[in-house]
Length: 88
Image (cartoon, rainbow, N blue to C red):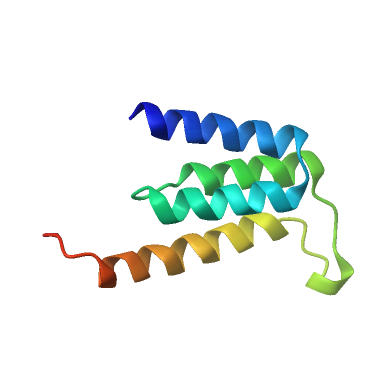
């Protein structure tokens, strides 16, 4: 539990102070490592609220990193269910 809280805090600090690619790598690692790491999606929503601007190449959508994090979260959770050998 402490490791999950530390990972969430580290991801928050990276979103606030580090480049977006560092946050994306940490977010993907957290989603892949922890079970149902929804904190990453919420923190990328915070990132879009703080730094989001309309992107012309993404059809003028403001919440680009939120949509990307939500898609990665969904895909990785589906893959983790198929790979792991545990009871539901």
